[in-house]
Every structure is written in C-alpha cells, then in structure tokens.
Length: 218
Image (cartoon, rainbow, N blue to C red; front, side, top):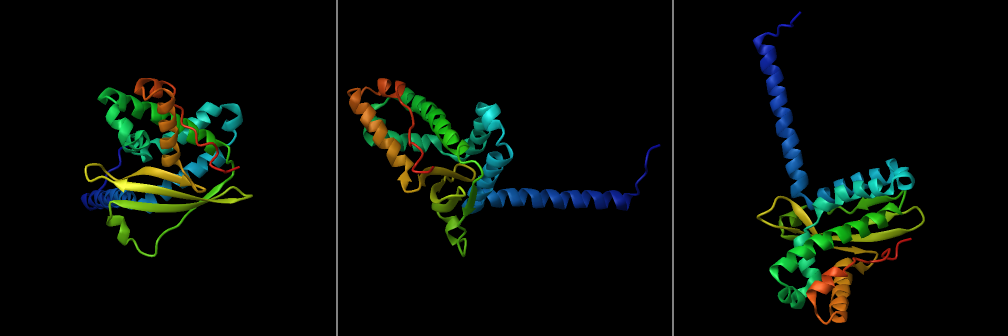
C-alpha cells in the first residue's frame, strides 16, 4: 500500500531538507575557510586511524599507512613545497619536466616518511591551539600550532599554511615537528644530493629520498 502525504507535510519535509543542506554546506565551507578547524579536524581523523585501526599496523601495515596518506595528501601544496625544497638555484636549473617529475617523487617520498613515522606513535592525542579571535584567518599565511602527546612525552607541531585565491581552502606549505623544520631539512638534503651528483638534476631526482628521521620523537 502506498502512503499518501498531504501537500503541507511534503512542503515541510522539503523545507527541512533544504535547511539541512544549507547548514551542511555552510559548515563545510567554514571548515575549509578556517585554518585551525581545517588542521584540527584532519588531525582528529588521523588520531582515530592511529587508535581504532591500530591492529592493521601488525596485520597489514601498507593499508594502515595508506589510510594515513589518504588524510594527509589533500592537505599539502606539494607543488609549492617541492619548489621550495629544490631551492631557487636548482629550480631554475631544472627543466619544466624535471620540476613536474620532482613534485611526483617528493609527494610519494614525503607521504611514505610521514605515514611511517605516524604509524609508530600509536595511542597518541593531538591538541590544537585555537586563538582567542579569528582575525588572522583572513590573512594569506597562517601558523597553526599543536601538541602531540604520545603518553610519555609531549611534542610541539607547527603547521605553516597558505591560502591561494585561485584554490579552495588552505594548504600546508611547511611543518615544524619538535623544532625540526622539515622544509629546511629537505632543502638541505636536496642541495647535498645535487652537489654529490655535480648538479645533475636528473641524477638528483633519481636518488632522492625524503628523510627527516623521527624528528626527535620516540
């Protein structure tokens, strides 16, 4: 038997659905526009993977790390970070194809390093420091600070974010973990590797591996 709804009831349902959709998209937009909520919401999602999916670390580590990568990858402006890691000198020496190639290489190596490091933090908690006011969310560059609590120690994390008018939302352009500036660390590594290969960009890319150790976190 088909149920019959009167017109006022249908209109009420449509109105409630419309209001819900407005609220949902407004909330999503606010999250993308606010760098603190953007970082915090993704961090808490990351913590859920680290804790609720902890069994995967032993049974299927590659899948465990992939879950971390799926969260982290959309947050980073890899093109801008890769250019910064190459530095002005080697960026100008590289061809357009080599620059694009390094973006791909750097993305994979950084995600592997980050996921592998996070996977070992286990039952950690991450707390984001929210400002008293949100006046700086309208700036182009913002720093968002967090505290990583591993249970035995606490470590500071600082995310440098940049908002591009041509792109939606914020993107991470650098990370400082426990005083270790990853952007600067990787740039020094790239320069040393380029020097080793007599500034041959092709060989430098071939042997590139992102390595920030454990950033002093254990």
